[in-house]
Length: 617
Image 1 (spheres, helix red, strand yellow):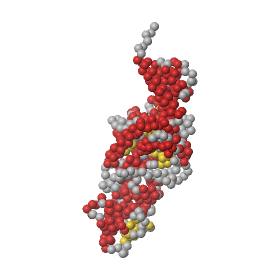
Image 2 (image 1 turned 180 degrees about the vertical axis):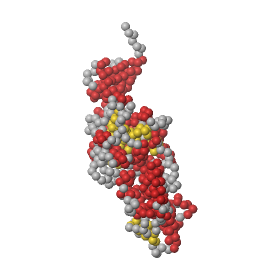
Image 3 (image 1 turned 45 degrees about the vertical axis):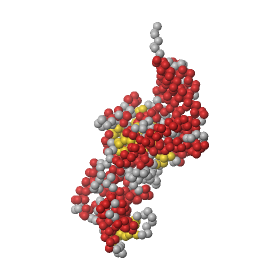
Image 4 (image 1 turned 180 degrees about the horizontal axis):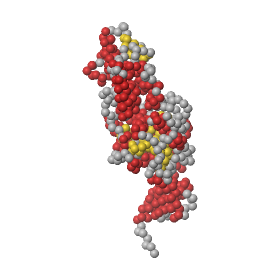
């Protein structure tokens, strides 16, 4: 931000040194000869107010007279046209402008509508000048959402930054995007709060700052998808970029499953505790670290291969607590996590966090296994947030490949990462899969009980009923070890049950209503609630505003997040019994057996530790 302001001040100084001609320049207009005197006076007043809002360099670029007319034949919903050096506006805007209450000033809808239409069309004229060209600027296209394609040259034709838009018409083309945003840039005092990166871009381009900017609500608003909490203070947060020490590329290492063998790429925000100054010790504040993870939203279960290939799933940016991500990958999926620091300046860290906030509130893409997966989405976030990274050859379609390219381009900062694996684990650069812990636990149980299975994987692959006898005769050490293993087995069975249910729901959503269980409605509501946490803009669809939510919107948001979080917890409990009836008999038995084993071994431990120790001979 400091650099942007410096550039703006420098540009203004150069204009001043040029003799002040830019400040004095005002676009000239030729009005239609058949205008009535009152209409002509009102038109001149509108043109004067509109051109007074233009940056000096914009006014200078409009260096020839502009023909101006009012028209009655524009299509419905079209307020104006700009063709060559001619502007035509809908005559109804003039009637409203002339009838407006002057005392209302710029807050009057008629005043706003007429000025917005005029500035929109002037923006089209400016964009066509040599000084303009904004709709063809690669940096503007990055920020606007016409993103670079991962496979092949060029940009994606589709703009998926649809949520929290000031006007959906901006997505029609880059030209319309520039015109819509310039009208809001000039008319909205809080534009720089709602779309800060675009405001900084326009400030630097014009070398000018709009007057009367409002103070912004503090921090970057994020809604965390923390499934174990309904505390609105935890779920809805305001992230201060000054508290972010570093950003890591976080790689979930692959496993044998086809969809997971290439890993999963994410970004880790190393956030300092509120009372800690930014420094190396912030890496110890794991409870404050956040993970930015692009995922196909499918309700928290595994996704269909075919639907992933055809783009049938939304791709959204989830904001997750690091601890939840560690548990999900290391304990449930038995995959390691590798955290690799990126070589970013503090300003680039702030820019990346700001771009992530924009995606969090605006982006609703489509997930493709090959062309728009987690690695591609993460690369696009890096590319669009940090121009220096955009110049590097980083594009790839696999998470492992993206890490290799980051390292090859010198975009990582691993000098402080210990070389030995134990040091990496100790300092949080590597989180080992729980499989090693499970093997250690199984070795204890096997040594005490003489279990025949060769390893923990083979033991956990047994039906739960075949493990019960060993649990009943375990001693203290073996029972404690088996409790860890049975808890892992239960987490695995819960994941498989969710997977089975989801596949059935995707295959035949109407068939659930015929299953003899009142579950279709509650399940649909449960999935809706999950979708809201992945697309937070849905909570504010009926609230005025765009871009990053400001103070009044955040107050509404907090109440709705709290309500839906509590509802999601209640729905989960209410669904549990009904959902089990939709599972196959084998899956239902396996889930019940895993739960029974956890209870059994827990009771066994309590009994053993309640017994007085045996006297030694």
